[in-house]
Amino acid sequence: MIELLILYVILKRDYTMYSIQKRIEDNFAPFTKPSFGALKPALRRLEIKGFLKSRKLMSDGGKLSVFYEITKDGIGELKRLVLEELSVNPVQYLSNARIKLSCADCLDSEERKRLFFVIKSKAEKFKAEAQGILNDEYKQTNFYQKIVLDNAVCEYSNIITIVEGLEKDNARNS
Image (cartoon, rainbow, N blue to C red; front, side, top):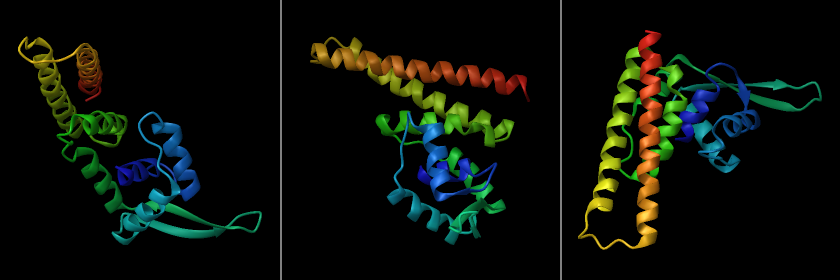
């Protein structure tokens, strides 16, 4: 997911590693907060694969700064990562779905349509599973489990509502 965030952040402007981390925090703090220890190797991997280019510039204060720029192949990789299959793990799914929805503006209308369908379908599946456990009188769930499951149903319902709103906007702007 770190590669997706890096590519998305530098899609519109070149940044230094520090600025990339700051932009990720500014835009995605509720979902993730990558450290420099995660960022630096990810930037190196992306550059080795040809998805980023770096250039060194001397700042006004005489400090050497490395700026990263996305390549044409990097734009393709960004789209691939946004459209990549979501996790079957419900905990990872929620976080990843939110990040991918936040980055959907880098996709064309048809790609967004496909992304929305996949996210909504999985949310409906996970919601039905949680609701099924809540409704099954033979499952031995305690009060606390029921509260947590009820919250999970609400979270999946929220994702579904968000996607439905985005689907309408996408259809209107196509």
